[in-house]
Length: 194
Image (cartoon, rainbow, N blue to C red; front, side):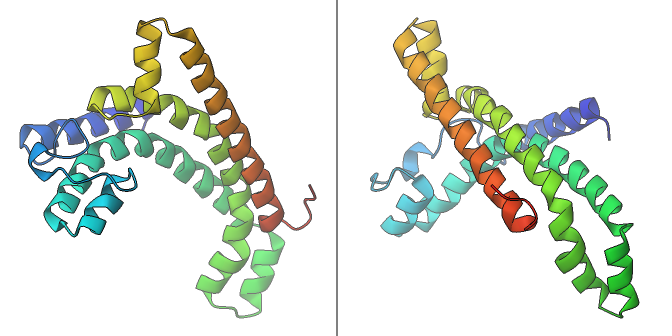
């Protein structure tokens, strides 16, 4: 599926869910299900309060923002993993493992997938930048209070010190996630040294 077709599919899913009033379009929880903020994470707070109805409502409010933010990156990572896996499956060590009579599942998960994940980790680390930037749009559109929405409001109010601090926080987060990706390289491929 092409990228414009992919976005069209996401748009259709969202319009279908909103038109049928299956999923809410804004906020983090319904007004009739408010719970006391203990941790600041509504899913955890609703469980701590023992309010299963509020937990379900919070999950329903989470679906559309999560799909909007996560689905494009998922498509990219699936494409990279598939391409890498096809390349790894042609390698000699996979053929040798199959020739030894190892079960197909063991060959795929123990030998092939571990080596195929190396490019996927690099792309995932690079794509975190789009997730960090995308949260500004998602929080604004879906009415979620968070750093992204605060940055957008601060830009309109010309509160430049706050915008600079948020950009610095995003940059540090991006660098740390890329550092974690480098550490994962050494786990996936012991030949790579830091």
